[in-house]
Image 1 (cartoon, rainbow, N blue to C red):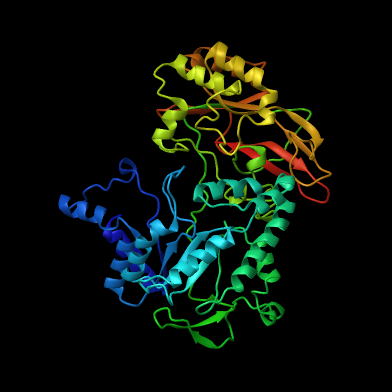
Image 2 (image 1 turned 30 degrees about the vertical axis):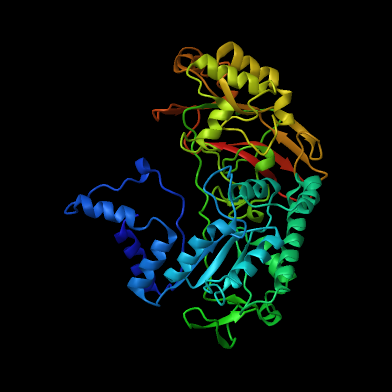
Length: 510
């Protein structure tokens, strides 16, 4: 990152009075995507220096401290279960990370915010190790445990996998029977996080004991946790105060010696959050087809894109911004976006899974074998939390195999039509009990350009088919065409539940 970009951000923060900075390294950039070009009057050596100055978080911490002194209160990340950039780490431990954490604190960090965790023993061991470390740099520094409220079973599985965070077996056993019912998962999740908070509160703390919640911009569950754990003083709840620190005596907590107000260890000074907002999805180099007019199952017009039924949050912020919710809501989980730079594993693991196919027929064989339930157990677009094809996909396996084996069209996502099955159905069901679920069929696949132009496109645009079928088509070169307008949105999975508004779990849009 260019030094002047950092300076501009810090200067703006200083001007508007923002004094709390969470200094993170972030994801390593791809050079071709974030390459910094020479600007007018800027020498090549200066560009190189700017690009290489902030390689690690400690570099950024040291720079802020040298340039701004004690104006900013600087927080850094800590990892109770270790940190790894690899998707399948072979070695991960907080002991391995300690030298880097020491470097960040010695560079000028004022407090630590941990990665979220569900294993309380892992956290308490981590905190004890830091407090007793021979370097003595952690003896008094505030350590703020990071907690992830459980919103949805699939989001839990995905985020813990990305963070390489262990889920205790007892928690999984409690959630597994109710994993399709988001409301029940939330209730169990609130209890689980409250138990974690109480266990941590029982550990002797050096100074105020605060907690950092990774909210994913979903505040309802966090509010319940705060109330259940009595983290909001009763007088503030009664008086309806907006600030959790108003009319309270000032205290000094040792962060730069700054005087501030704190409630139950939740400090007004510490409000870091390091989770990015949801990105809108893009569909490139593939084709997706979905029915648009289904006389037996008409869906509400909604606004979002998502992957499969089980992995989508059905309540989306308790119906924010109108009847069917906000397209940017993170409650749907991570939007589907495919990129050659975003494989779900390391290159070495990719080669062990898929080899090095050099011909279309070799790739067809991989897809055919996977669809048949054989090796490889997953493809780059698969949900690798599932050991094999989902039961729903298995129902339409023969159709998918026909596309793959007879036409060399490689399918990567699909679902069958469902018309009002009970929400408790063992294969298609989701959401609360006593509801009904609906699906429009769709299939997403790669196919040769010639097949698209000479065969499939004329068929889809024919007078007998076009009223019934919608399509989105894109190429690796960026060309895109669709039967729909740019603002069209298709609900392809939705549900109707007792006493609730329509819930939409899967959306398709441009």
